[in-house]
Figure (cartoon, rainbow, N blue to C red):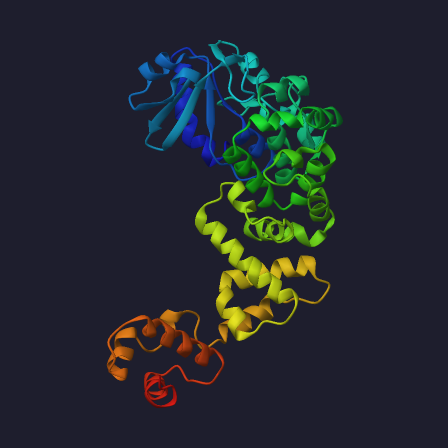
Length: 394
């Protein structure tokens, strides 16, 4: 019996077959099915031409018709259906200059990146594997379909994808494939930063990220990534440090930011401004934490998520003991966790002081905030009013 993700798309395959066309599940969904991993998007490849696919199904969307891809909408989901194709000419080392539709599944699978992604499964669950992807799954090996020099010259991003699969699956990289990455690493200069970032973040989020870091250094590919040239020692250290494996994506970015001595590092990766601001704030907290204990002010400034990130990275850098649970307990015990928790408003301060509004209100709230954190003032409206009107006259 097929897994639910395939069963939902099965009517599309059967309808294509009923109309005289070949149709198969292909790509990552087949790989993950064989590995027993969660299945994400289910892609379908067919001998039917795009216009033929559109004539069979009532609800379709042209999402990439020039490359043969039609989105088929059914009651059980939305499925990408792509015509078997061959590709030729990759002048930008990313996209093919021409696409030709074919009727052969094997010709279609031949153009794919790695053997573990070049398998197909028919409607009855039978696996078609002309390039021995199942052997590589069994041997836990990343290997290109055909000659690696050709595959990486066609699409330079495949080099990072290969390293990413190592990180996600915990596989080894076949020698010829790895050596080809070393030869062709400079081709990454043709790849947009956003695409590099997408692959790199998937590496950072993987449990076997240390394997990827080792490969980035061994192949020299790290030099082609934003602002990492000259930091091979940092990447190598991440690969050798067992504690790095458990870092989340955000924590791994923080680790890198702490070691890369350039203020524009995260901006060079085109990360969202909100994320850049959060990591840079955590970097400042990390510096303080490495040279001392958590103070109420530092905990407050860092925030709950930041405390987890800082303490996690500190444990990778410092030989001193670090406890996330202890740090969070101390954070939770703070009398306030944001200025919104203060039991007094700016309007009340104006009323109590009898002064017109102005910059002093913000300054007064900052003083109240500090006094509460220092344990000098109780976070109660009556106490704050008394403190403002008698103990803190200005």
